[in-house]
Image 1 (cartoon, chains in turn cyan, yellow):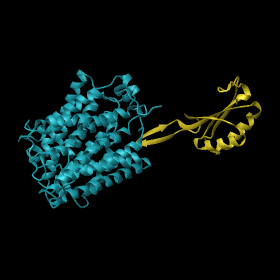
Image 2 (cartoon, rainbow over the protein chains, first blue to last red):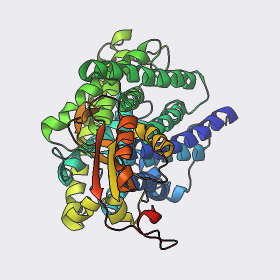
Image 3 (cartoon, chains in turn yellow, purple):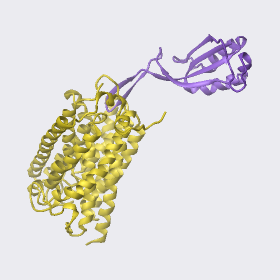
Image 4 (cartoon, chains in turn green, yellow):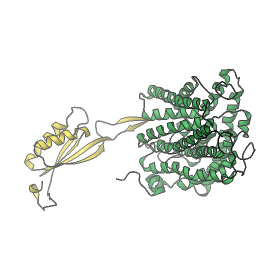
Length: 400
Length: 112
């Protein structure tokens, strides 16, 4: 047991926890004022519901036993958790991973903004965390997982978190349908200062998300801190440059969005790359994700707050670029294409991205259909018109 | 008595208030309003998507005044609120039948 490693992972758990309320404000600023509490609530509620589910069964399904597809029930109710990673207590790993489990389904709320019924949301993410998140976390983060075993790299969850949540968001958007008035009624963000506040919290917390994934207070963690910060910075600049050229202005929402795309893309790479790589990865993410904004309009998907463009596309960019930029002199024993490792890693990264995307989409699509057919996914037209704050929670954010 | 209603640019409110105080007007009522006129709106861009914002924020102010001072008040507002650019606003005058001061029960010009 190493007290330095343990302290850093415990600290990182707290940093990652803080990201979920950060995400809540990031999203809440972008919705209309009648839905701001609905958005905040969906995110914060994930901290309640998913933590409980994770303790009862989720952690065990992700990290128990030796299966390659899914774990077992050895660690159910968090009993019998051993010191999984040598230098840190098992409970430090439980705490850190719990915060990942919480934020991942919360990412989906950006796509379904303003219309997802609260009770159905609870059912959706509760089941999703068991049947989608836990197995995918197993595949990617556990040494017995088949993607991990195959050689695919995912330092902090480019595939397990961002591609996973992004594809789930797409599946739910297709099943739930567009917001009423989508496409002809303006729905501009109601409070961009909230979004900027959330961006700052996310950026801050992401240091723990990525560098904590080293599970040690060492050089890899330090490299991950630097990579994470630089990718966010380059992501912001990349997005703003394209935005300025295409629309004439550098916007605050663009700065916020660009930084987050850099953070998303560096997530799988954080502890495996060095040098100029985080700058290149971040800039490609900022530019690529901005370009991906047009997908939803073309497909008529009302991905309200761009979970697809930011998390799915950003996650894919980072996961695939790791196949080029992985550097064994930084960490691990696998070099990417640009460091003389050939195309082997890139192929594994393709398989990981594709497998997670396909699994997440298929299971989430079926789950969303099942919920729609039984208790319904959407609020009534009248409830959607008056907003989620009043219809779902009997509250108003802004008294008049 | 007349009710004078003005629609002005919000940043001109303090100038108008000071000018009205200077000529002895004892009270005005102000509200924040939105509207469209010849000034037109503007566009805002969020994540590359353009929104046309048609309604422009304005301030509406109301003054009730004796008949013989109405023209002076209108001219004072017009002078103080002017920038010379499109969107300076409008002023109109309507007749008022009855005015009551709630505290004292005073009526008519005594209530102003």
